[in-house]
Length: 410
Image 1 (spheres, rainbow, N blue to C red):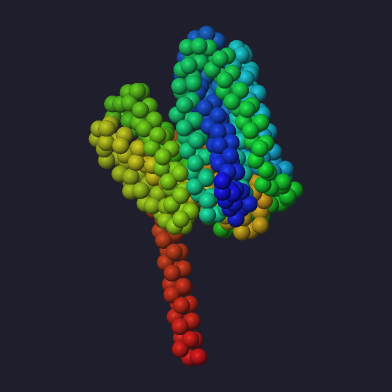
Image 2 (image 1 turned 180 degrees about the vertical axis):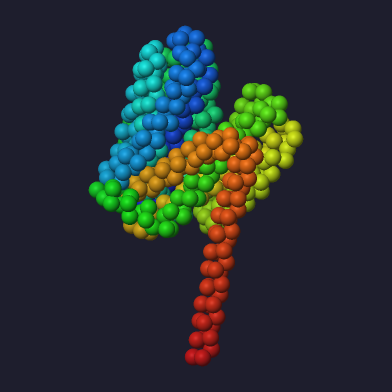
């Protein structure tokens, strides 16, 4: 047998596969719990006598916990290391999922959901930082795409787990998910820790967010999150307005998620081979064109196809943008844990701005205007990136002409 190949980041090919399996599996488990609640809400309302408002609070508790935990877990990853942070998050996810499987008090269910959100923040911050620090730059986009595809698969499996819980009971369905989460904490110990932390947490984060290069690449993570949040809300409303029922709306987003799970790793691999800029510009161009045409379809089917297209364009952006941000931080000499913190911060901020902000914008105008605004943001970002690329090429051409002139003179 040949010896395992080792990347410049110090992780063997076999170690990279374990990293993808553990981080991707952990994100999959967290995404399952996040999306499994929807089919169970009618059961909770009926059997636990919950009001619509209480059901809405239960749904929101995960997002509240995740948002509250984003910065603390990112700073924790910078201090104690990504693996330790992810282990803590997984442990909390396993505990919360097990609790959710057996308790019947609405207040305790809210608490379990909140704790799972906090744990999920640790899983995402630690996991993404682990990928950033544990893979070589030439493989980082590919691995980012693979673990994000696992998260997308989890979001697709979640409703099925929720439906199974309705049939066989929460104890069996969520107990199995809790066991899977707990098993991940054992498996991930097989992979060496990448970065034990620097102890620079707050200082490192404050310095990073003052760097224009960091803010620019954070924007490339936040923008697709903003578009994704807006399309999930306003796309559903648009389809309903055009006569689509719940099944058709659900099928639209299920198809989109299925395609995204395939596109993400491909986009990451392309960015590893040809550079981050090409797929980022492609995703921005697709998003700008389709978002600008959001109001044109007059029937549900072409509107659904457009929504799927936007989702695919967004997915093209994810892995290259996240890998790009991690590389900017790496060149600055920051701990790998900060990559998880800033990726999570950019993603959650974009999601909130897109879903909540887009919804409020639509209330003041209509469903189309926020999408056109998002198209404008995508187009402006594309023009800025294209302008910088052109300037770099011109500078390179001038440098080449000077070198040729020197050689002739000599």
